[in-house]
Image 1 (tube, each protein chain N blue to C red):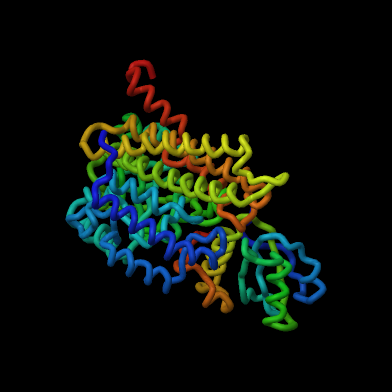
Image 2 (tube, chains in turn red, yellow):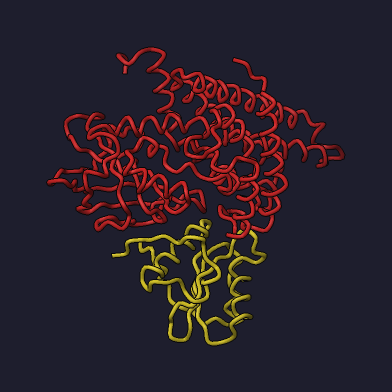
Length: 388
Length: 111
């Protein structure tokens, strides 16, 4: 694997780094420490800048007007975009655009007209409804939401939990069991409109994150026409699984971005903070923390870029993505924790970003498939499925 | 557990405000008829937490209002939740929040 950046990649990384430091950081100084949203005016101004950089809608495929970046470049930029206080869950406050729901690129033309294009134009928002109270890591077995065919319609009943953005969405992708005896081959993906009778956002699920909350959903005789099936009946598991695997690489990269910034702040601090008559930088115990941080960052970065490289080669990258997810989320947690420790009392105040990163990074070991499940995936690939 | 804020109202006076802890959290302000006129939060940048936020409300509004508070570390998601509940009940956010609300409020099914 060649890790030498191309001139274009180097230029893009520099551009985004400058954008974060010059445009995003100053705005955060005036926002609530837990904020995940800019004012409409600031958001519009920053979108103007990212558009002029040619990076607005960077996750959208080129044929739909996006930047057409490969996975490696996108990963490098994700590491830059998260290097601010809100960066883990709101990198650059969404001013690089949103890819919407990637599954819609495989929708039929009618569905694209109704959902994909309005989403890309910023007119509609969608949510991804997979996890249920019975579990999220094993969707093939845990999905108990049922869809029963009634003429040309399907009637959905059930619940979802930990669903981001459903309360603000116009539509959503909802995975429901259509063939009860078929396991993973009995799940179908439906596109539902949130104004359909029977769709309910029951509550906000408050978590360690103060913003970017999750919701709990309920479907009561929610009637959906067959035209709103995404893909094939009983073909939903592949749609869900593909998305989860693909997301793990940028997910890992954004953890790394936060870790890199935390390390940078820690190094700056040890050079100015004195204890017992000397700088922290001279204390071997502190030096070891900095060294361990760097080892964590470089190890996880290598695994993350290796996964991105393999994805760009068109090779299977499930194991590599799982390794990147484990390494980056666990390393990120350790690095933020050490940086917080180095900063002492200040490290746990809301004056510094560590306490927010500490809370949000903890979620990362669970989100997008818990690390224990990632280990299961790796073991299955290394040893073989027959032993699981 | 109800998602509504159901604590009894207290008169918004300088004595009450000064006795508030300086914690982070959310609060509601009502008029004399107990209609909610504002939902706010004391966030991580507030100098005196809920105490300071209520002192500011009193200075801005004067006498004749009531308040209730909830200490909450997840003050932003709770604040949004309270705005959604109010919007669900009344079709709109409280008058004092017309210029102080998230860019998109969203919906909750309250029945």
